[in-house]
Image 1 (cartoon, rainbow, N blue to C red):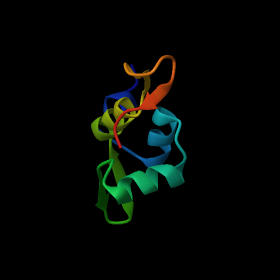
Image 2: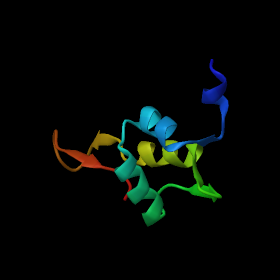
Image 3: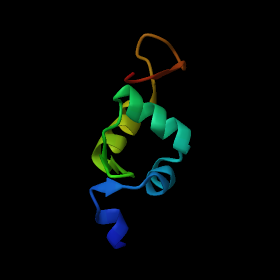
Length: 75
């Protein structure tokens, strides 16, 4: 396993590769408070655990009340 995969905080580029989301989408999620990030000087570091939790909340899964109609979890 690469050392980068073990880090708790990611750059925008690493978060893009991890999630498949664009930089703009990540920025919007951070601005909305859906994903946690820290700013150190000009550098932004995205909390990998927070991003993973957001992605898990956003997984499509079947709704028990409807047949075959996917719904999105979370906000």
